[in-house]
Length: 138
Image 1: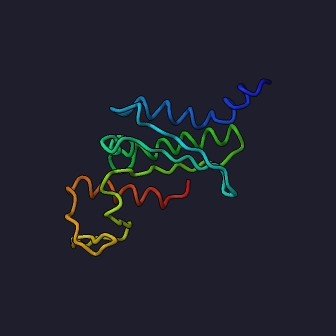
Image 2: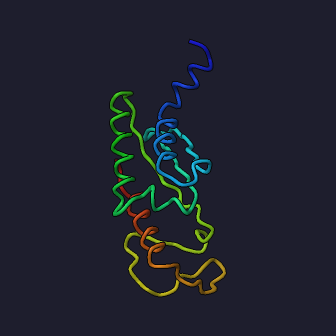
């Protein structure tokens, strides 16, 4: 097997996720899948255009959960444990901290303690769903 073939085989999981996500989003050129191997298994970090974040997560996280299910099936075949992290690279990300238990409607403060206006309800709900999905261990 050539070095090129080994490189392709070692990142088939990356290419798999990238192919599926690029088929779903409106900005396929912005899809980036980074791969990190640690003691827990393979972590795939998915970054998409902020406008496509909702499409990747889906209603109530169904699309993201489906991606994780497909990765679990791939992991069964390859004797590997996969985790998928969906990265929120929205420009406002640095100003917001959201946890799954955060239900207050008070404005969130950034690192300089200036009040930051809340995002739209849809954006806030998407961030909360993303935080909940990151807590799942699949």
